[in-house]
Image (cartoon, one colour):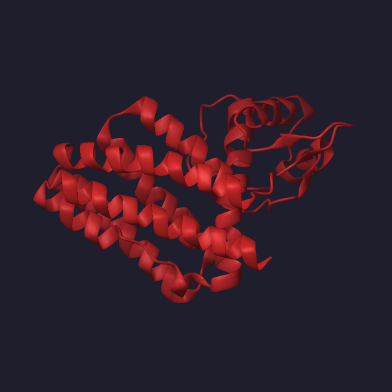
Length: 220
């Protein structure tokens, strides 16, 4: 059975299943182009068909999965044009979240982000692809939480669902050691309360990551 990152205690079954399946997509356990079946997920997640159907419905609505007719559901395969659109959207939103975070960040929040970045570095050094994907997303999610902008954060989370499986492809092609990030520059900007520097570092982080995805797609 697939385990959730977060504790699902107290949540209704359909929400637990949704979060499980969402993480499977976000962290590339389901690959671009991979078909998804209700029965396969029922067996994998050890749950009933109704919560699986509800989770699939929600993820299709969010663009994380695509319904192709004849009950065929797949993880979407990104093209170069789609990556360009996602890059534009991320560049428009994520630097603004970093800017807001720099103006609000407290010492304890910076320390938590540093601890997450340390775990990320450890995953990179070990070549732990899953660990890298989880901790990289966690870093950005924690930063967005500090920004206290739930509407922007929800939009960004939807974008991550769309490119997450392709980021796993990048890790497979280039390895974790060759994945750039600007997290140290972001952390320095947060400590200094420098909103402009935080926004600039986040834009560089976004562009570098999405350029890697474009390169991987062109190499396929």
